[in-house]
Amino acid sequence: MSGTRRTRRSRTGIQTAVFTVPLVLALLGAGASPAGAAAPPGPRPAASLTCRGAGVDPGARVRYRAEILVNAPLRTIWKLQTDVEHWPAWQAPVTSAERLDHGPLRPGSAFRWTTPVPPNPTPATGLEITSTVRQLRHHSCIRWTGPATGEGLHIDGVHVWNFTETRGGVLVSTEETHTGPQVDTDVPTATALLRRGLESWLHDLKATAEGRGAADGPV
Image (cartoon, rainbow, N blue to C red):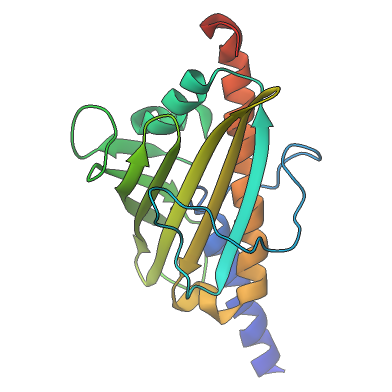
């Protein structure tokens, strides 16, 4: 019986810790998106998303890919996604965000942001995430990597974003992988929570971009 309780506590800790990393590195979101907000899960695509030839971690066991059509100008979507210091204004799970360099986001740019962690088996009460842009093509794609760390908790993530103008707007596609002792302990749960987080992020991006898109002009 005690072993069963320890297992349940361990899984609860994974769910709590992983679920509160909303963006990735993105990390994970604070909740599932409303029905229809993002493309439903399906079989893993044969080829991963890339930016300038680089993709997610091929050896990661925790991974997910999602996409959403946003009816807003590409310039609006791009500005929201790359203006990381203003993420807290439209993503509630992000409690702070700061650039570690200046100017437009570019390869080598780094930013640090934080998100709280509810009570869990580790001493961590919050996560500090340091993301570094590895590849970027203006108005086309971004790839960043970096650790999310808290006391007794560590997750490494690789996150790729693609932006493709198409009929009806811009198709925003994202793929992310996570590695680390906590997430690797329960891959199905960590993957399900990553799915929720990415779809939540896409929903917030869509809602915010479409709300601002009317002021920015036609798509």
